Image (cartoon, rainbow, N blue to C red; front, side, top):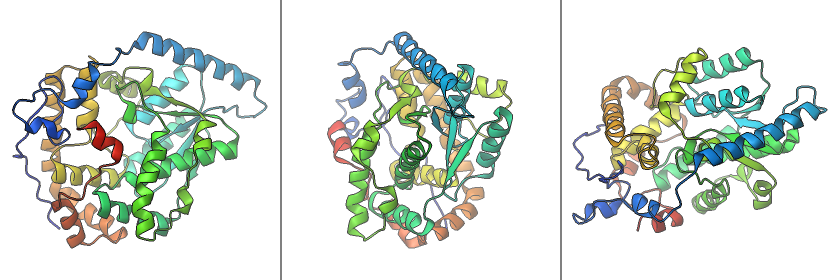
Length: 358
């Protein structure tokens, strides 16, 4: 299989952040120089991270007291979604430094990388933590991944839903009502909502039901989400990448790469597919958010984007054999792979995203 990626895609970028016309088609208009995200940002109240951090620390103090009063011998009162990636690892260290010992919830998709597994094991051993691992019904899970890829060109959509289902199930079984997540989608935005997962679920179900996929294991209800106190750390603290890697190194964690996902093989393939199909990489939206909130300079973000895209090109040959085995496991043929990436009508375009980019 040959994944021919071109780095010569013609792109127009927002003059304020680094969003390209691949994410915001309005930039195709030569008279538009500022992206829709920056235009929307002007109408928002600036995020007061000092106040947000203060609110977070107050919440954590209450949780610490709850842990001390707990009859649970191990004392866990918080669940942390943990993949071994930089965001969840930094989230773990942040919680530990503020006196919170979380129960780690780990999603085993069957596509975890060896480096990701090593980080998970290192963290559990180093900090003497309890964990719960969730494995989905593999046949149904892989069928759903394939179906959603054929419908949207997105290889990670099913896993996003599986992770939320895992967190809700773990919370119910362990009788824990606080779930913490790392930077992720809220990185630098200050306004995430786990309830959006319900919108994504509804969007995905339209394709899964049409193809007769068994997705019963990821069923979700609004009352389940509302019964949980969700803490997305990127909503309360600025997600400073330099600080993250300084802190990880301080604790002896050596991640293979600063930006390309090292913890999941499927994520790597998703990044390559996304770049080939749409001409942008996974970190463009989060880097743009960091520029908008003043955490990162625009030229720094552009340098990181250029560096990662060069790495994607250089890593093609060594990743081709890995990609073959992953696609085989998902029953995705070479023809299907190429057709999905070549067809502009196949795109991840939920209703709320269409409204946002108009």
